Length: 153
Image (tube, rainbow, N blue to C red; front, side):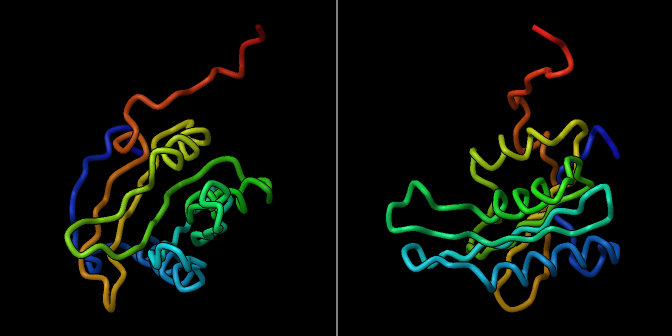
């Protein structure tokens, strides 16, 4: 994986098969969103180093604070299955004027498992995906907090 992933908007049709499949898994997850308060559906999918894809949707709660973002739902499924390293992530939602990126909490959550930078694909999922913003976790959170657990204190 490149340590210098450059942000770019590309056509969905120009992406490789694996990336398109990852985005499509995020689209499927988005359809399962439980969001009766915001009506803002989000889907996410992570490609683990083991080759497995872990997907999730946002899950809201009347208390708001216990709500769960799609990215943390998907990554939580991966971690609870034993995966700790990721090759890529896709997030789908629909905002007319912009791509939807992970919130700050999700960015830091993703950074916890980013020993190396990995691509993050943001797609607008309304009827047909045309463009995808290709970025990375390091680009989304350039000064993310990392605690060195390899050293004893």
